Amino acid sequence: MTEKIGVLGKKTSQRTDVERVVVTPLPTVYGEFRAYGYFDHERGDEQVALVYGELGAEGVLARLHSECLTGDAFGSRHCECGDQLASALRSVAAAGSGVVVYLRGHEGRGIGLLAKLRAMALQAEGLDTVEANLALGLPVDDRDYGAAAGILGDLGVRSVRLMSNNPRKREALVRHGIEVAEQVPLLIPPCESNITYLRTKRERLDHHLPHLDALAHLTS
Image 1 (spheres, rainbow, N blue to C red):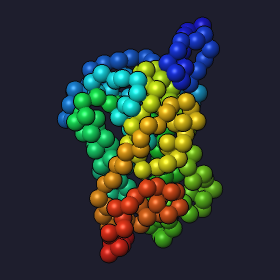
Image 2 (cartoon, helix red, strand yellow):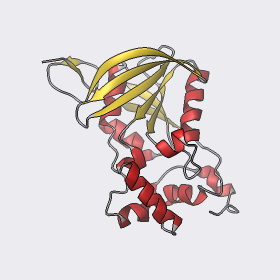
Image 3 (cartoon, rainbow, N blue to C red):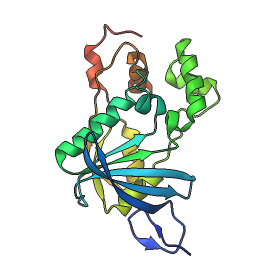
Image 4 (tube, rainbow, N blue to C red):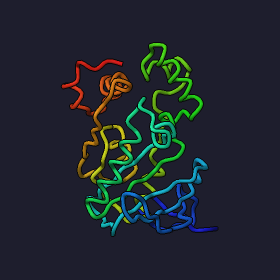
């Protein structure tokens, strides 16, 4: 049986979550990265980690970025995802080393692209992001971070400085065996189009977004 990569980067004869398939240089506008391509056997997704510099084992600057086609590719102002991705890549390059794990299959907090668009349509009618998912009979957040932990383990990473405002992401990594030495805020200035969405993330999904306190004048 083909060897697979376990959460802590050890080769085993059992099928585990992720298998490294390819590594290639990836020059970007943010700097010279290396793209590590993985196949997630558990969910059938293709995943990628963008690595800058030489990674250590401890305190690695890292971002687990959930796929968001509308924000990452189309520049949607409904969310802050595209700006967070760009900020994370810039931060990793500025630090001299780090990794951004781009998690496919996480679209719409795991509900998929079309369901996310349906939820956005309900939000345009007045529901918040939590209410919209529930109105569609879908989970509020259906993301799993096992593959992300497996990728970090394969890269030799045991602990991270996690760029995230979401405490649940930190808790998920710890459950999967990756220590979070620090949670680094990734705060993006909001706009009128996403302020209600961001406030809902803070009030109902426990995201740490202290910069919203000074923006009471913004409404969507």
